Image 1 (cartoon, helix red, strand yellow):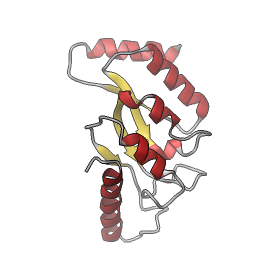
Image 2: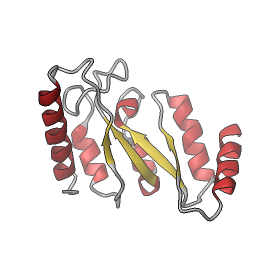
Image 3: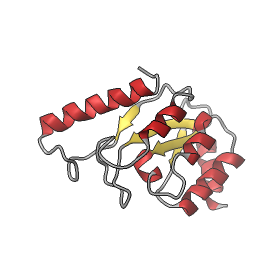
Length: 149
């Protein structure tokens, strides 16, 4: 499989450096099956998942990849969408199941950045100050609901 071969080559290149390689889940099930295949076959602690909530909301079974590879979580891209495209709106503005995410995320030993990958373009919050304030509050809410704050 091409992805697995490329990952192995990159891991070899990393060598003993204190770096990690994370592959992001995408918004299509076939791409995520390839990602899952590579994670299953390459148990290297330096290789893991960059979990994107908005992408995951566009697949048939959201949160499954997070649950299956919780122990391999390296990075997060947190945003919401309305179920049709990758809108990058604030959490709780769209239709992603944040309750389910919080239940799963609460079980994960994760100490990395909790990165909000959001934009104002399609958000209900159109003033920068208001948008940033809401983004901060919603990020805190998710961390609190996940027992990380």
